[in-house]
Amino acid sequence: MSLGKILLVVVGVLAVLAVIVGLSVSGIYNRLVTLQQNTDGAWAQVQNVYQRRADLVPNLVNTVAGSANFEKSTLTEITAARASVGRVQLPASGAPTDPAKFAEFEQAQAQLGGALSRLLVVSERYPNLTATAGFRDLQAQLEGTENRIAVERGRFNEAVQAYNTALKRFPAVIFAGMFGHSPRPYFASTAGSDKPPTVQFDFGTKTVPAHP
Image (cartoon, rainbow, N blue to C red; front, side, top):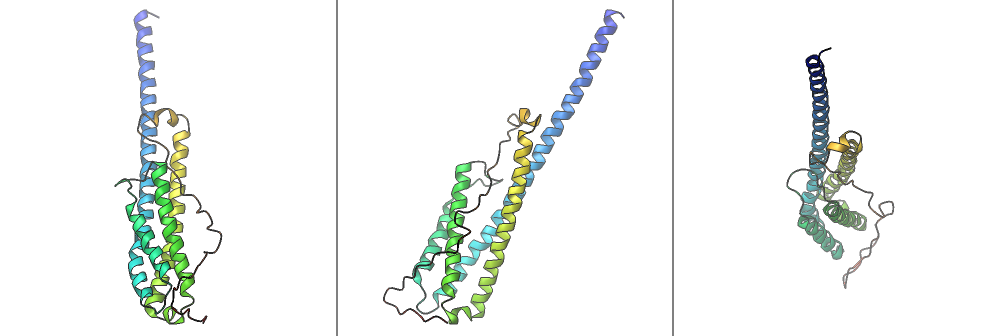
């Protein structure tokens, strides 16, 4: 075989290899983009249900505050917890990549969730409150929202697991950093979530209503 033919064969082989590598890299890039979009979409749903809970708080607080002698420190705690949630600054688009900011967001949401749980426990001592249609409606909406939060957090974790796993698999692990992809943090179980909420009553000089 002449040198010219050998060179043509070598060039042809290199061209085929370049095409194969290019297609492989393109496939990796497209897959990572898809998985990243999945995590962003799941995160948007998480934010949606958390926002729904935050939107319920003012009406819930106003309804409960109208009940005579209701334990006021619980309402103060809820209002403060909701305000702390609003102070957490996260990226405007896409799921957060900073574990510290993610943990701050999760902690603020956990504080609000805990305060709301304690409010529902305290409200059981107020038959007049729990008998009102407005409170029952808000309670049902809140309980439904909490269930949706649990569902969307689980879906988000599943999307993040698929994305993070893809980043660590070969050969994507070689190119992930070049494409600007990095692992996303997960939602963790809230510490103490397996225990009932602790309630401390603070009525001041007001009379504590009797158990129903």
